[in-house]
Structures are given as structure tokens and as C-alpha cells.
Length: 130
Image (cartoon, rainbow, N blue to C red; front, side, top):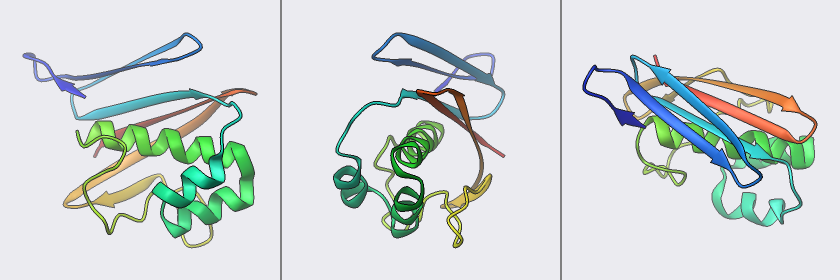
């Protein structure tokens, strides 16, 4: 996420298979787009994601993984901390019933996260500071 001189925030994303996205806002914003592809998603999830995020992935499989991946990327970009997010207590953006939360708290910030399936093989998420 990059703050511009006109007090707007922009975030751009390019996925390896050549999809481009851009988000512009007067608040901090993060955007991520990912093509669904074969990856060792359970291993990645166990290493980097919270228990609730892993439960969501166990329930929804590879689509669930890419939903969480794009949300994590978008959140990390919006708060300018990257994918790994500098808060060991961060539980992610999944509720106790393994539903995706639209509004989440991160440190002292309230974030809104939107996730959309653009096609059978493309997920995207956008996060904006409320």
C-alpha cells in the first residue's frame, strides 16, 4: 500500500498468470488476486495460518486456501506489514463457525475485508481500513 501526495492510497497486484488489479482509496487499502493452482496448501496453511483459518481450509479445500491466502495478502498490504503480519495473536479473518468475517480487528485498527471468486480459477480479496 502506498500513500500518495494527494492523501489517497493505492495498491496494485499482478498474479503470475498475468492478471492485473488496482485499488484506489482515501484510506489504506490492500488488494490481492490469485489463480487457483496446485500447491501443497495443507502444509502451507499449517505453517502460516491460524487454527480457525486451518479449520476453514479443511472445510473448503483448495478454494478455501486461496480465499484465506488472498485475504492474508490484502490485510498485510493494507496495514503495511506484508503476508506474515507482525502480531502473533492475530487469528485471521475467520469466525468461530468457520465463516469469513467482513469486519475484523487488527491491533488498534478496524478492517473491512471483501473476497470474491471472479472465475473458476481466480480469487481476489480487498482490505480497507474502516
